[in-house]
Length: 338
Image (cartoon, rainbow, N blue to C red; front, side, top):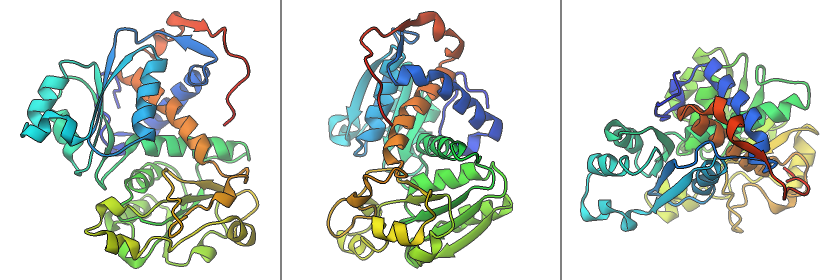
């Protein structure tokens, strides 16, 4: 992929070498993400953060990543705060707001809407999640986290063993992650969900076509017994026709410390794209896992900052200029634990 000036709409755009390039740049930018160094390489540049669906981590992560490269952020949140509420088309919105921005990060509740917007935009657009379709930057930070977690055990993403658990039908993060895993070798994937919330068949077929072993199951405990990663997802209640329908599945697959101890290998890594549902009738990842050193959910969020910085640096073609605009942070007094 030619990153400079390009949209980042789907992980389908990426080859393995592109993913490795993003990760290499992320590694270089880690001191800036951790505030040990500071750069103004994007000074004067503007990110248009357009989030038409509720978001906390992704919206703030994109904004913080851009700020840490020296740029400024202008936000639109919710349809009611935008001209779309007055009937403006995505085409017109794109033409206008791309005149105010150097790059746009966009989330939309409708699958395909970000690509439609990007087709009219005059600047690069990064997909921050479109309905139940894709979430490419989340998949990249998830894969980056997997790579880092396994590297500490002398392993790589090739031959990964992973269980994905929960709402696999509507969970866009697992859709994008599966597509990225197709770029690697001999991965074992266990898909754990109620039959009604199974992974879309096209994605399962892609995994198998890539030579991966895929098992579909509705039995949690047996499915997490021999894997490197347990990747849990919440029930995507906003995608269901009614709250009552979502409630049929909430709390179906709960992982807590007792289940982890009895059924997982000692170093199995626990991941989740967040937010995890902490309501009593849900708790797909229980709070009693918070002290488990293999709980990587907050390392994921830290890594998201670094990966999104890498995407901005690549798309705006400033990777080789970061150091020219860098200084040491003189107020840095310790370090941020991950």
